[in-house]
Length: 244
Length: 338
Image (cartoon, rainbow over all chains, first blue to last red; front, top):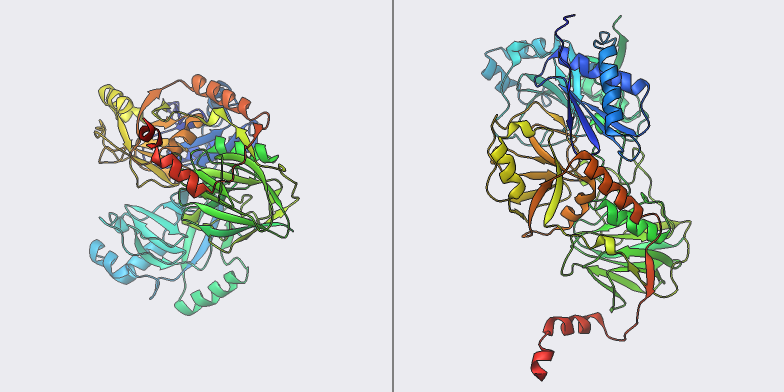
């Protein structure tokens, strides 16, 4: 790795949160550094550290300033960054069944028109890629994925489309996502997964972590319905692989 | 088991504990009280842990009764109108609600939020470790929704409250919302110094369209130096984001966990509650403080919660609250005699 890797910027978000900013862009190398620090702090969290929120380009640390001093936290962060500049490549790959057929892939025709691809090519391109979970945000279990092929890089809609069902597989703005909670969206809905990345009553409620890899496996509508029924009965239909 | 029964409820009345912590990294908002100091004060007065589940009362107002036993409680809602069977009580009061009696809390001349804590434990199943209600994602509280008439809130491990109503002496809740302290950043470098100065000076007017998610401010728009789009990063409670129209939005308890607008400053923890209590039309400005100053303010706040609030017996009157309120409204009785 380059010795030109810059020090992260430490930015205060009030007196109870510290932002460790490694960059300002969406970039797997920046994400690696974010997740390396996230892992290191998670392995041995200082008392008073309440939450770690990895994002594309920064790690937000929520802390109790009456327990954990800002300067002590900053020192800890700098030491860990110096010692763990890189992160081992992701070892966890999840395969999510995905139905691109009607009624799930509502916006595929629109994406085909905007990209110049045939609808089948939209599906095969999306299903042919491996995605990286950059972060969760926006809504419970809403997973922002990188790795969308350039051919599918359509801008987000100027104004939101009507609400989609739970667990929609969406693309927009050069990114992909799994949108767990029904809501209006500026993204394009190209499919749905019967797997629930987020299920508050399940233990664990979440199993896919930031930094993990995801692939989508096309299934037809009948298979989707069968898998969704199994998922509703408490079974997890996502498959986990150790990629190496 | 004794229970608190909701006889009537306006919009925006929810159950809140200290918040749902540990899941922000999965996009789960903490929720929790809009005014953490007032919530903790009510719990302390009721003899509970500071982060216990309490009813957060909005200006929508709520009416409760007790069923299957008396319920000891502490209500901290300064500025609200409070009545027990029609007799006016102070806005901050400890009492025992006997079955058959009715406690009504209505918006008064000040304040947006109040807290009703029972002496004991509101027996509500936690979701992801917390009972805090986040209505936008339908999590926590009662099925993730606000309270409605007919809801029954069982009180486990109930303890008797004050035999007669007692006023709670809570001077630390007499807070001024005209000057709100902030720590600049994390994206203050997206704004030129003169715009940061203009942001601090304001004045800003609190928009009436605020809710548990955000407080919207009206005033002279703040100009961005480097555009208004950033790659999403984490959002703290109190973060002040400035979207494209230049009008600041303070993100509150029900905020999203991440966001894509530059955040010019962050309201310090001790001032979140006073901002939350400001009503639409209130005017305010900001003052920037250091992290150390903000931590000192937190320590001072914590000291108010070491002991339960002092109590004074309420001098009972036989006047119905409607009659008292009419007296208050007249204010011309004196003039009439002059």
